[in-house]
Length: 342
Image (cartoon, rainbow, N blue to C red):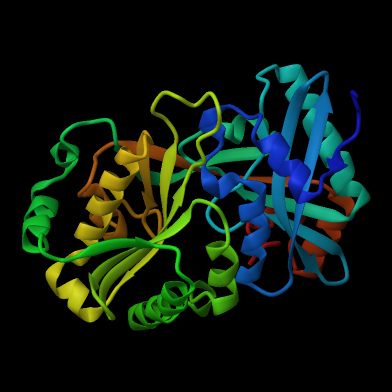
């Protein structure tokens, strides 16, 4: 039945809606159950699935809410990417959905929102706040053969060096427990902020999701590199090659860094994704916007095909947002866009 207000959907219903979205809008990281599991990443996060529907046309937004003490709530994307999805390109419908969503947000004291959009699908057009490009990200064409034709000289040299390193895919709980410690040791060695160290609860939550798998490079307990990959679910009617394999998190040991096993990791992922009929391996971008970022340099070794990462923000409750900005010593016009969320 057609409705004119935004609805909060239980995760099972939100997943049903997600399955009706166009295939290019269904990367695994945008699925409602992934957003739900991602709340285990940090304390104080709650996940909400907001939907708007009229005459079979649907707009769906999975977001996290975090308390802004004394004022209300801030809305943010799950880790990685988020943002609304829509099975209709009609600007009038998108406007109705957005207006209904903002009315819902104001009614629940949501001050504003920071959103990170997935570069493999241009769904930022369904978010009617302020949207701007942020940085380049890298996508590997899994339909190109041979896959290595996209790799640069450095990557090919590293692959030759690590050709004998064994690779396996796993969903086993023991491997997930091992990965948590392996990943945190690597982050500590890099000096990464503690927010990126991810506890065992987080890995246990995403490990239980369909399509989330570990790729492990190394012999037995001697891990050299390992990564978390998200396989887009193939639905009935998705007979042609298509969909996205996403590189979510990864790490290498000191020995892995020495021989370049992280290149073996991405090569193995590309081969697996192509074998499962997916169209692209999305690697993401660097740790910042600098075009010379070392992580971006590593990812460019596998492809020069770039996708633009966009971010967006929107004020949903102007009175509460203004009051909060003033409490931090800012006028509304001078408040930084990240004020609510860091």
